[in-house]
Length: 287
Image (cartoon, rainbow, N blue to C red; front, side, top):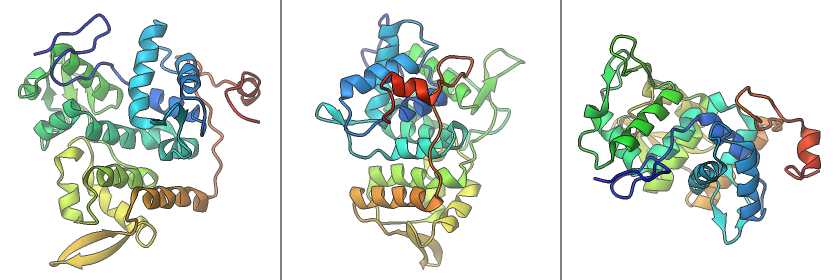
């Protein structure tokens, strides 16, 4: 089993090196700009996000870790398009937090294994501790960081009876972010179809309230997928056939929505927003 170094990262086994907050991801995505030098983007994100980490080197490491999942690069520059950044400029952190967590669960082995072990156990009021993750090859520090991350997403709460953790709730997925849940699942599986029941029963959604998924399937029927019957079961047949097509379809939904992103990243723990004029003057935003 791995042991943590001075930065909290594990040298063996599954990693979860930081106690994450959904706002960090949202603010980092608000700073994303297309075809920007990647090192410059990471500099900006380090300066204006993850402010709770006082050490700048640790902040840069955390930003870089998150960037591998949400703002990948091509060569030395950011990509031409970023679905996560586009959605973050249209919707609030609260709306998108479930989708952020879903993506992390799908990408990170510790979170994915934890979701499998917790499947069916996320019941409001239930006690949650390290023993629930006994089969995961991870250091205690990684498990603690993961549980404290679930605390930030309000899946867990501090247990006033025993001083550990208890389940607060399963996350409801807003309609506007449901397509992102389907997208991250599709990027992993590349399946062209799935029944609604099979999708809802995936262990990946252990932390999510799946009863609301049906409304999401209905909302975007005809835009992203078709609803049909397969062996008597309601089935989903996705319209996009490749990553580029799926990306275009997701971005088209935002265009049809008709809104323009006007959100700005928070500057510090108090939630202050840096004025757009200041960010333009400092070169963070284009004119």
